[in-house]
Length: 309
Ligand SMILES: Nc1nc2c(ncn2[C@@H]2O[C@H](COP(=O)(O)OP(=O)(O)OP(=O)(O)O)[C@@H](O)[C@H]2O)c(=O)[nH]1
Ligand SMILES: [Mg+2]
Image (cartoon, rainbow, N blue to C red; front, side, top):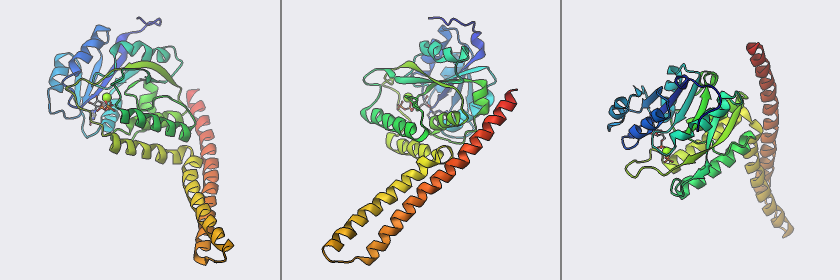
């Protein structure tokens, strides 16, 4: 398949974060070269295997990241890249080079600043473990609830960016929370994000995952909620408000039940009142913070408009 819009393939930097991916890195680079993409940057996480050697041999540019973690690697790479377009892809061979046209399309047409390759559109049955499939679905739902946009697959490892995006994002996350942070920042800055269908295949049998579904899943969930404090405070404070109010309703039902049978529980009554009042206060915090965030967003929108002029 070839793209309709004239494209100088050297204007596209293929960014591959890789840590111990000797089983797949060479083939992946060659697949991109076969499609005519020669501008390939591998950001290596101090691999202990032959990843760097194989990548260099295949003709990619290899930079060893200064710190640790996929997030730090991506941030460092974003500083190095000056090309108009960047396509980021995991080095574990689970994504196809031939899907690049789908990922690039909306960027080249000017329809989007960022594209998200949706793995759920087409995946091999073994590509996701049961746990990963459930975890991804839960985190996507949580993201949708927290930010009010449905992006299908926020944790995908295949994404496209314009230069404006990679230079405009302010990123801090060091580990696997980076995908979440990129997505949240883009939504916050009202960038145009488009979801595109891609294929997700099983991991090579010799390659090991660097992701711990429990530890990293919880970290990602926490990042979604923590970042929502600044983007959608009603959601953030609403969670705490709901928990406190429900606890208050629970103790309240107990107090009323006891009272009906002739026993008065004074300390429990006080606790009930405190729980419900604090819960309601949380909702009020949420509403006030929402107001502040809306005003700030309006200011940012005007600033952006002025800058674009
Ligand atoms: N530079 C760098 N790359 C990393 C680091 N950790 C992981 N990666 C790479 O980031 C990509 C994603 O890592 P994976 O282990 O495949 O994680 P995942 O795709 O989220 O999880 P799976 O579903 O298990 O494949 C791979 O290409 C890894 O080699 C790191 O600390 N530094
Ligand atoms: Mg992977």
